[in-house]
Length: 333
Image (cartoon, rainbow, N blue to C red):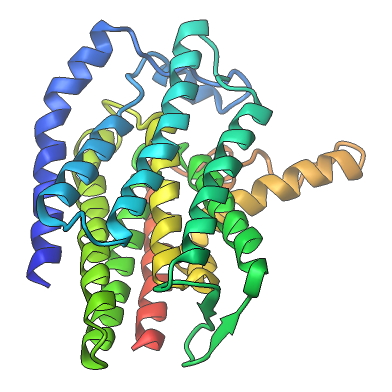
């Protein structure tokens, strides 16, 4: 527990220190956010706010994990590779948006190729890793479900789905960071329980790997907490795809190493809501003669157009996430 608290504090401190240095630099480089013209009109005032603030999150997670973690263990290197790998895809997307001064960077197929390719590497690594393998835990039971070779496509689906779900949720000041703060803290406690169980059963190697994963989860939580200092309403910086894809990758890899992919829809309930709202909106538009389910998708934009203040939407997302996570932890123990 002490290393978890320390990882949160160190990551938080690093993010707080980087912010005042990075934000002015992004201003000077004119790395301003390009706002969608078809989005909520009041978002047009946010155009020019520095983006790529996700660099702060990634650096905080990596540095904290390297300071406190043991790189010789199996989990931590892949957890960092996953986070940095998806951050790199997001960074390239952000750079192209700034360069071409448009709200679209990489083309959709380019993003998917990068995301699926990295997901395939992660899923294959997990499948071959004896500490993970092809078994996933059935929620709130002692049963493990062996997917065999089908574990790989299932894990790939979970990774790509949540990477994009977090990306879609990053649409309001503090929304993605605030929600991920709660989710990563929840995963830290789940990993703590797994580590304790492994230690009690004599599996020291698994317990040590889980302790590294706990440090990583704490670093993610601390970085989100620090980022909120600059990203809460009114935001001084946006995380961009650099941050949202990195956080989606971090969420996914925590689910994989803990073998809890079946409870991700509960822990990440509001990420799921964002993704599902987009699927429903697009499906309805194409199949029902341009009829829409929501005023605008993702879901948080629908609430914006209904007249809810941005801060209230963010607080409700965080409250719902917190309740869902507490239910998971209550049933988990």
